[in-house]
Length: 131
Image (cartoon, rainbow, N blue to C red):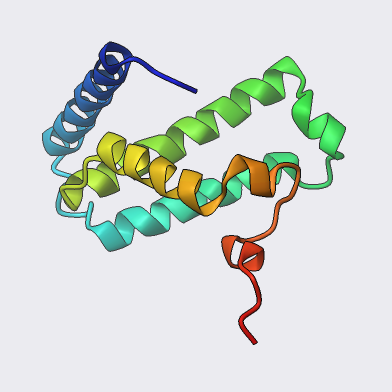
């Protein structure tokens, strides 16, 4: 996907607006005292587990074709995960958008399309065996 600089900046601006709103929300409720990276990470994992529950026992096909009500429930779990992720990044002063772009560039190098297409192995498994 090739995004223009304008599109990337607009998305970063949206993320920044969301970060500020979440920070204000926590501050207004005096929750910053509870929002340590440790606690937020634990909350994020709990929300990820709740997401997994929606897919447990579904077939691959069913997981791609959720009924509307289930889809909405999954959307709310994803929102919870996203919110905690933003809060963790904020408490650690990590720019998520910049970090994501950097990681995508790393992954493009680690997983060249012409080498890994159609395969889901770990990056180290694509390296020639040195032994």
